[in-house]
Amino acid sequence: MRPSPRVPLTPVAPIVFWGAWIGAIITILLMTKFIPEPTGSPFPWWIALYVLGISLLIRFGMLPRIDQTGRAFPVFLFGLALAEGCGLIAAAAVREHQKELLLASSLGVVLYMPLFLRNMVE
Image (cartoon, rainbow, N blue to C red; front, side, top):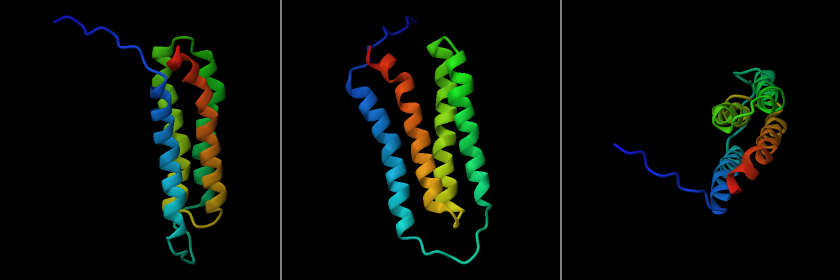
């Protein structure tokens, strides 16, 4: 079986990729407007911040040291998922500091944007 030739990415691919991530965060933000606020929180708020901190360590500590795109991409996706995970934890389980954590999650995802964007277009 012969491997299929590699299809180059069009300039639309990064727009679709990042549109999906940003769309997910916007959906989370809109959904939290309709969730009633209970009195207690089942989850400490700092755990969501801890997840975001691990994501930022991956973004600024690990990814700049990996020189091959093929090896860096899974680490990139894991860090991006952790940044989005902060927003998911804030939306689902945390009631105090919820809006701040969702904003921090959004900024965490935005920090990942320029990393592979240039490589995807070229």
